[in-house]
Image (cartoon, rainbow, N blue to C red):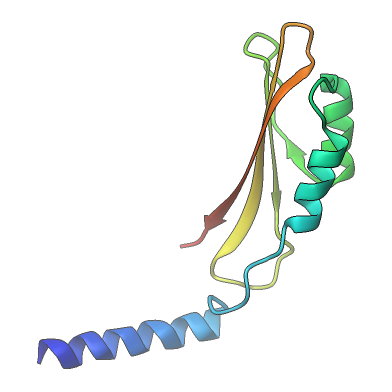
Length: 111
């Protein structure tokens, strides 16, 4: 009985995912990541980093001059998917507002 119930729910979940778009191939962020690496080398001024992120379509958070951290995010194009990915960028700057560290992570969001 437990085995058949587990099989039922596994099949149900797979069907729902297929209908909702979970089974679609993950969005490929390779080109955007390469642009970030090429356009934001170490030493880039914060103002230039803002321009680059804006030109790539990122939503930029508030830059905290006190902690010298800038965050930005870009969601994959909308395709009526249940689970979608967002590229999250965290840039750290030195006291002269020059880039010293770049972290880029893909974050998955869904219900």
